[in-house]
Image 1 (cartoon, rainbow, N blue to C red):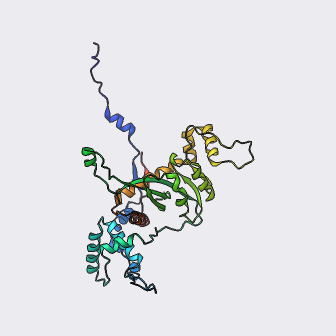
Image 2: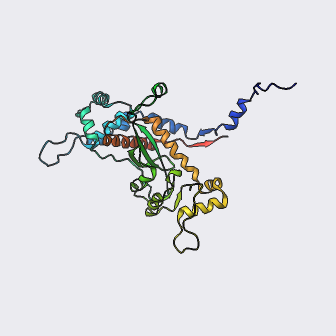
Length: 330
């Protein structure tokens, strides 16, 4: 009996899902990682003895009003509020309560002082020493909402004209540590900031990986100035060799990548050079937005930069506490 044309063919959805399912992973160091997760909520991690000792600002020996709080005190207070997802006024009240419970007799910066000082302080993102190591850097970018709108409002009524974004650029190592961080306007291309990112790293960089948006001459020039040996950026599919082999000039790294791709194929090239490490950049962005949110609370751009750098320093502190050591089980 012939089947009706309109009759739907049943598909085994379970078999399709199993084919498309990702690899399952298990964590080797669950005990240590579980302890580090608990430490992220410890007050002693975010307010330590060193910060309390340097809480008050040193005299500037200049005429005029003297600052009461050091830059470290402002940074610690803002960092504490960011960890526990509090706005400036609530952060002021939270610190007052914590200091009262800990019997700490120190003045607390009010919310207006936090707002004013956050635009002028210099935030240093803590980094571990990488001397003697072959450093691999993965660069990527993502958008952070400023005057963000909830997904429900966007679906029901669409985007408004006030919808504004900032672009967060990060350079990380395979272990998840942020080595470079830069916040720009949303119309700044990834390739335009690569030199500024690389200048933040004082140690030698052996390899740099990025997606196709970094396939620009300005990026290769910045990498060559930094003496990076391996530039793992896939050339465009219609790319052409600039400097042919019969020229005496030094071969361009992009041309070398292109020659290998033509010889073994793009997919095999990515596996051979280890390009898939670039996915760690997306993982870092996911961690950033999951732990600290996908929007900036500050309104002024200079304050947004400080807020972003404080978020980066928080993630590095959490990374230093402990990260999962996982392995594939299927």
